[in-house]
Length: 403
Image (cartoon, rainbow, N blue to C red; front, top):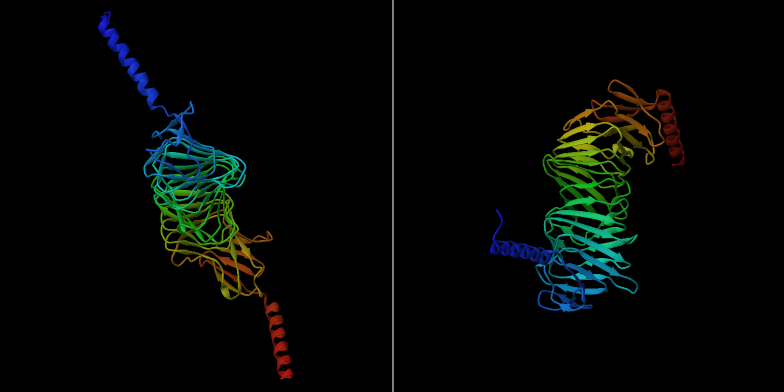
């Protein structure tokens, strides 16, 4: 059946209307023309269109900012892609006040960083932050309601001085970028999971900060980068009911706490902190090494708590702080934990000397670790004890003579 002419005209009209609608909905690119101190709102013509005509901000458009200085944002501004490209001079692109709902990518280009000083980043989608500097590319302060996926790409790092109150998902998408955290706003930085496939990714603290992973049930995320501290102390907390896996180097000295879910550690921990499994499960895998720093009078970091602990890999014993190799240290609180020691479990000193296993006992010279008690003991041979006793008597005799 051949449509009548009026019907063909109607179809043609619908096609043109749809094309016009799609063209209107596609994001246009607007360039900032408000200078330093200008207002990013819906009533001031502080933008230029593609023909360099002054225009009002159009919600959902792409924004390009080519100059440094403060820009004051009104509440409820919506942007698709935000690109800053500033070179030379001093200062930074400094976003103040209001809120910014970002649905696309934030790209820092040129030589000056972009600073979210007091602007609330909102939304629930995936937002990519791509830097181009070798150092700090993006600085985030204050509190933000964003709850989607926070993707860190490009180069350099994001300086996280603020916090995201709705625990977004943190994903590293390029090889050598990272995040550095301070306590300017909030001591705990919580994410609904952390992932990154490169060993070049990193999360560092520049203050006493707790990194928290609150992972939902059935979810599992893996971060191959490193966890460390430049200054202050970094701590790690596992929450939720899912699984968070760390396979990279861990050099932080703060506590590792499991409050729920599964925390699986596959990398080498060279810090001085202990582990408290309050709830949930801790898994130290075959490739893991955990450093225990032994001090006099039985003092050391420990694995404690009431949860589950599957212990494989290696306990690395650091005895450099001891003044005498005599005593006992409770490394694992087997009285309250539900622990298992796996087939790849073992102990080594920092110089690489290994312990030999016989059943539940691991020994090296005067040192013995018993998996049934979780206790490490150092008891010198009888001849050594006699020699130590003679040295003590001689010292006491000399002291009496001096009196």
